[in-house]
Length: 314
Figure (cartoon, rainbow, N blue to C red):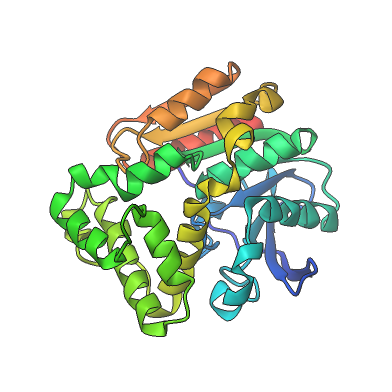
């Protein structure tokens, strides 16, 4: 069962230099086990605070961060498009460390969903001494194979919808679909950016629609959010999550082999097939992998499993 959605007991904006301020919030017990939640995207946010329901508020000191350029962090990517090249996974990892130091936390349980699992794994590999455990749901590593699947391969399942998505990207000869969208969303043509963001947002709903076909042909974000989300997603995905070659998550599993890890993934997650979670599990002998048979990219069963793992880690 989920825990009550408690309200933050503290929050703030942390200046991390280069004109960026990160929004952070704290909830739960001040004396509890420190934990960090990393949201999805890139370009998502902490949203309504649903993530807090996974954590026992009497046992955890929970920290949430709106990743740079999204949510309540400032500036938003749509306000600083000229600085898009500065956005990398390595910069996000440095941001996490800045928050940890600011809040005087020695180490913490690191958790996340979707893109947040990639960021959690990359952070743990960069700073293994700061991670007590990993609890990850809807697991991704943002490899080129995964990105090409979600932007091109899954079109075999939704051919009509993918054809519209591909055409809206207006890709050049030899250009990957994700690269075409990244190019258009980083450009100066406001109308082209808006059209690309709308088409990207619609495709996001298509490939998560196995359980709810009514989602197709609709987006999931309002016009004020979709352009920022699509800009950041395509920027990171077009660059292999800024984790190329020997920096890829699967290439550095030895750095976190000692970290207790719980992996939770939906069998029906066609956006990110379970093979990514399986490969992680195979490379981390101390990990557990729970496949939720009747769910896709997150759901109540996966959330309950994640909560049970977090109860154990606390």
